[in-house]
Image (cartoon, rainbow, N blue to C red; front, side, top):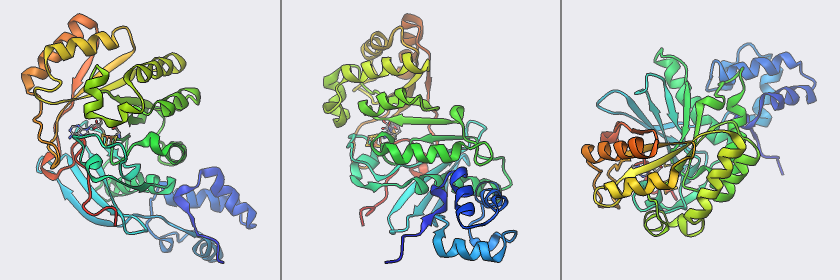
Length: 351
Ligand code: SAH
Ligand code: SF4
């Protein structure tokens, strides 16, 4: 049986060097290969012209460049958002989004094809779970966005949010491995302050992040301040109830000294009233927290409406004035191309 080919995007810089050395090639070729992968971001072995032919041949025999071909790229009418539909080696598809509205290019990356968590208002949750992504498939999305920026003559990729399709802490090992690879300062250089991981509230994963002191920003999708209301929106809350989640968040902040971002999708008449603001204020009071309010984006499977601007403003005032909690309202961008939060889904992704 021929051994499976190695995806180059799944290797750390040290692995690349070791790969060269175990085959009797100079570590200089390792440095050059790494440069091709993450500085030049080439999309084929043929472009690696400075590598000796025998090195390239060996690479072609034993490895592959896990470039994810673009099935479709769409731009939002406001010009700030570009959504890529990318094809995985098994022909499944995922979505990755390039966002420019903060003035810094940010990639919104998927960690799974589909999602098993079933949040009622999320298009990815509505499509169900297909499979986990491999470390190389997660890295390849960031390279893809980096390459698109390069081709457009724009500045390098600055930030990454793990807020695309899937639940990153349900695919913990692959996600952390991918982050280790892209963190390398001589590669994509996406270090601690440039990565935000958003979780639905997978308690064991949050505890592990804290214990390992993983260098990243953590965002926790809260959406409700009581167990009952939360479980109705986020079925995963039945497995990891609110009190356990808050205990894990407290542990995380104590252990890492980091503030947590709490996400709150504002749904009109469901969780956008002053009473809800008081409830979340009381829940988070005294914690190192910032609340990100996200007006609901439309999805096919959920009938709710986004909270109104005035409701969001009143919500923010209560949080800030009465509970000392800073908050932001996320700008709605890319909605016309279904690239907003919770809108990523691929028809027939399971096939
Ligand atoms: N699985 C992770 C990350 C992906 S979703 C998580 O759930 O946190 C990123 C954010 O978008 C989450 O806070 C999620 O709750 C929110 N979201 C999902 N569907 C949405 C929708 N239709 N409108 C607005 N926000 C949504
Ligand atoms: Fe999965 Fe996050 Fe969507 Fe929930 S909101 S279904 S956890 S991607």
